[in-house]
Length: 388
Ligand SMILES: Cc1cc2nc3c(=O)[nH]c(=O)nc-3n(C[C@H](O)[C@H](O)[C@H](O)COP(=O)(O)OP(=O)(O)OC[C@H]3O[C@@H](n4cnc5c(N)ncnc54)[C@H](O)[C@@H]3O)c2cc1C
Image 1 (cartoon, rainbow, N blue to C red):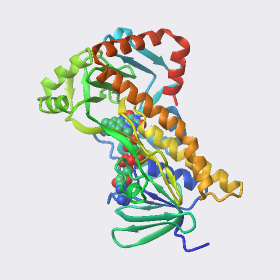
Image 2 (cartoon, helix red, strand yellow):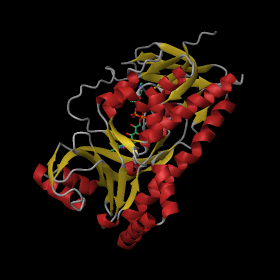
Image 3 (cartoon, rainbow, N blue to C red):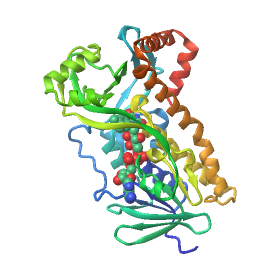
Image 4 (cartoon, helix red, strand yellow):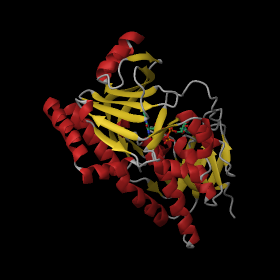
């Protein structure tokens, strides 16, 4: 071969970059992953990570195929078999139930997920403590990255998975569109009077959605999205005042809230990269799309990017086509566009409908949710989407 260090360089070892490395390596590509964090992700089995994801069955199937799921399943996760969504009355919630003996998905900790992906058995090179400071890419020359420490690496293709701010995407002149929601997501683990019953719940308030996700230890992980002023007010409360506010915001759907960890706060925005490929490089994961967490789909979308990229490149190579060529990359981008745009549009519309449409719109949407619960075909469609 040439003077390439690998077939594919992956910039960023978050969940999506790690999954792409494992999937591309399993498809027979020589892969090097570059992550700036000094220490590889680790799982200690102690307190549950504040950042958890609702993984869809499709994501779990991918992790299983990569040999990663058994590690997670033997450590800690929380399958949920139903989902309830409501606006003003939990008794009139839209409800999805999994088929008997199945789940709608599982709640998995960010740290455990990344540690399991890092430990995956594949023969790909992992570089930790390596920050990329410059990139260049072209179809004929391939991609080159320069590390802060001065080393240069080259490959046929660069996969950019460096997260929502993606300085590398910007260096290659790849545009994105989007806006700040002027909202924060407050995250904590809480204890409640009544058991969660392995049901994921979400209330759409006119200040933003509040999700209660069931954890394996009986607590719930909350994601409470609200405008910055309300977030500041909630962050300033002491634990018992916060628990009272949360109990009222959740309409005591699980009774009183009687314990909570410290809160962590994340800014919320929407972002979309309309053209995710350029000659010699492709953008995936949050670097390509940032969605409102109300659908809990960010990681699921990114894992689907990783899977689609590995299968598109390996099909092209098996057919004797240039797997790194613009035509192949364009086929990947086409394969991912519809799902990504649909997810961004639906989550954005729901967010706006409840928070900016005024009380009447929120009430109409709330009634719509309970009406949907009685409209079987529509509900089935939503259920299929929820189940990936
Ligand atoms: C409050 C909240 C709740 C959420 N809940 C859910 C949920 O329930 N389900 C779900 O599917 N999604 C959820 N998401 C979305 C999810 O967090 C993201 O979609 C996901 O973390 C994106 O992963 P990523 O690998 O693309 O990016 P990141 O996790 O941001 O990883 C990027 C990596 O690139 C590295 N990096 C950056 N620059 C460089 C560089 N120059 N050189 C080397 N390395 C670099 C970084 O160190 C980092 O490790 C939630 C998000 C929020 C804010």
